[in-house]
Length: 174
Image (tube, rainbow, N blue to C red; front, top):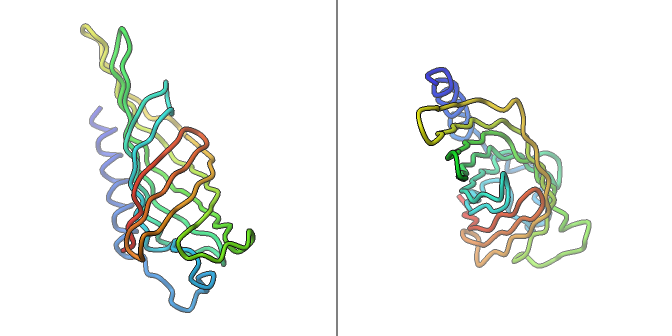
């Protein structure tokens, strides 16, 4: 169990240091201002992942990859229980987004439409009713989805994703 927490701490530290040192390149085209990817903190509630559990998810888009793609550091927590145990999982990974605004001809700066893909690993803790406990690290998780963002202004908006589970939340421009 101690090794899992040490691994989690190291990965979390690397993720935070990446976020802190990431810089936006002002010379990179931003799709004519039609989407706000890099610099977006997306926080939300997730539904229907493992055993229809609910959880919290967050990602921060820190890197522009080409004209319409971003890369985000992602973290999640979800848990569920059944008749014999309680489970909780912390997920750490990356989320790729392809903003389809340009391809779909969306000219409003209020809306973004995107496809996303996730890859990472999960650290799971199982607390069995009785005297048994367990924990483990899944070697890999992945997910895909489509989503949209509605921007009230440059700093705040709402987002929704459906795919491998569903997510609804707030987008904050930093």
